[in-house]
View 1 (cartoon, one colour):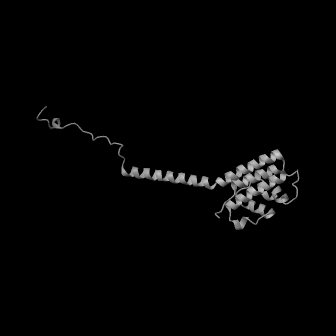
View 2: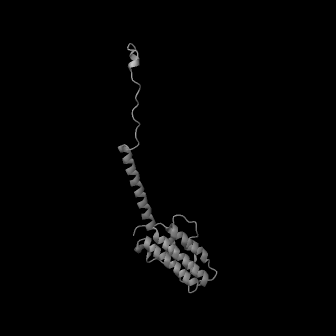
View 3: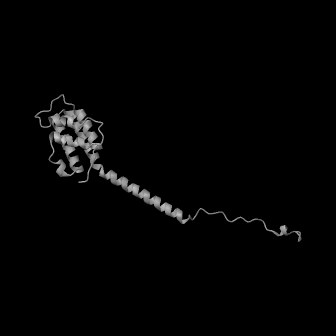
Length: 163
């Protein structure tokens, strides 16, 4: 070391310690809390939506079971009555009783058609349910498969209002 050289007396550059990733800054804790809160809210909304639609899934299963019974037995009258009962029960669950309970025949089918958001299946007002529900015997030529598709479509896509 040369005492006359002042640069030789300087020490080398010391870098600060590396920034640790733990513990995170308070902003990251807040972001994590908000993220967890958002995920909890989404989970709660999904469960609530699933529970509110359980009646639709039950009605759909019942309708498919009735259709399978009709395919085996061929009893048009009992199938038509079962479809009407399932639709009525579902409508009573979805809409105020004063609007639904007294409806029958063509007005009942028009009400059902009015509650569907988009029609991709034949309307129920033009089905065998509207034409032959009160007939003594359902003609054999009636298209009950179309009724099944319309009823399934209605169960899946009808609007629902709080009762």
